Amino acid sequence: MQPACIRHTDLPGTSRLFGDFVYNFDRVARFYHHDPHDPESFMRAAKQVDYPEDRRNAMVAALRAQNGDSESLRRLAQPGTVAVVTGQQVGLFSGPAYTIYKAMTAARLAQQLSDKGIPAVPVFWLATEDHDFAEVNHAWVFSVAGEPAAVRLRPAEDGTKQQPVGGIAIANSPLQELRGSLAGLPFADEVMAAVEQAYRPGATMGQGFRALMKNILAKLDLIYLDPLDPAVRKVGAPLLKKALAAVPELKAGFIERNRELNAAGYHAQVHIDAKTSLFFLLENGTRATLRLKDQEYAALADRAEHLSPNALLRPVWQDYLLPTVAYVGGPGELAYLAQSEVAYRQLLGRMPVAMARSGYTLLDARSGKLLSRYGLTVSQVMTNETALQERIARTLVPQSVAESLESATAGIARHIDSLQGNLESFDPTLAKAAGKSRAKVLYQLEKLGKKTARETMRRDERGAGDARHLAAMLYPHRHPQERFYSILPFLAQHGMDLIDRIYDTVEPMCPDHRIYTV
Image (cartoon, rainbow, N blue to C red):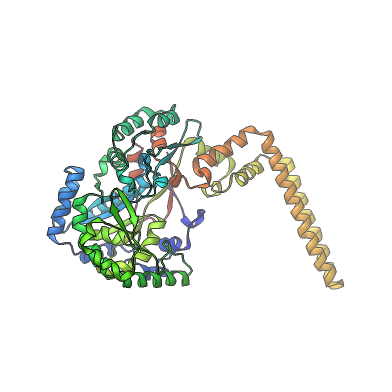
């Protein structure tokens, strides 16, 4: 079954930059090098890739040590093969579901490019360097009753402040909490077997994440890249040395780019000012911000292997390490790239095609029936729960009461309109007063209608429960489903082959959000 499509601009929280990126690319084209909606962009980007064989050989060796051998790695070793790259922080139990959708989009695009004569493989960048533990130490799941529940990793006694999250050892994995939350879902045991195999005693956040991803996405043959690997850092050192020497120019370029974005009515994802540091230092197990004068960074060239780039330089470093033809990201990452274009132009001389990941809202059978029963769309559910309850309640008001309210509203409006017309020729001031009275009367009738609907909802417990279920499944805690829940409860509810079913519907060139009824 093919998913239904809705425009991102019909969803809450869509930024103007992302809306124009997917639907009016000409408005943002100056911030990127290639139009992702033009199929010829990929051939042009592939021709621009300058990837020396010694770098290819060194990276393949490092990636083989991380991943083991695979068909994708053997193809990457061949001259001319390019990479479709995506990535994510190494969140507990694979992080939000969109992580999976990113990986699927990259794999599908690599397959499509290969079929068209551009040999490509999918690569997943494990953002192990990031040090925001609070962003990755939890996963949201739902129970058999459809209630959201957070499964959280407690930090070690020595703390995790400024420590790259990928290297944090998981001392007290919340496996039992996860099992309890998923209990009763039909495929919970299969899901728990995969999780327990990945998050074995002694595993780090990065290791557990990669093992789980490799398990549930095995058929996609993704290559996983951990940038904390010393072998990878050695390969990438020349680019960081070049960036160190160019700090003054880079910062000036970033500041100007932010001004351009703001002037165009867009937002700058990363704030940059004269005091901003573009680098962190990896030392003694921590990732500490470097605070130097711009001209002093060049002196750190000998320590390049121990430096970690900030959010704007990281994509450029990534695409120096890899022969990247396209990068698949979400709205935030595409906003980063609009700023990073400055560094791509100065340090790399090329930029991959920026692609929006596929986005999904998964619709279970009950939710689908409820939408139909109450005449709702998915985007109408994506509001606060009170507004959703009122919308559902209006459908539960007895027909006679609803018709009486509608008739009274229409009749009063008609009579006041007639009165206002007659007063206009008699005294415009009185006519204006009648108009104001009309608005007040109709407001009170609308208010009465809402009170009637709320009273109906109070009397109808099923309607209230239905509203709670829809909110919890489609817009939990006022977040889009894919940005809130892990993929794990969906697999526990629908089976591990859900991955294959979703993957069969992925179409990278489709700009819309997908509603997939499972």
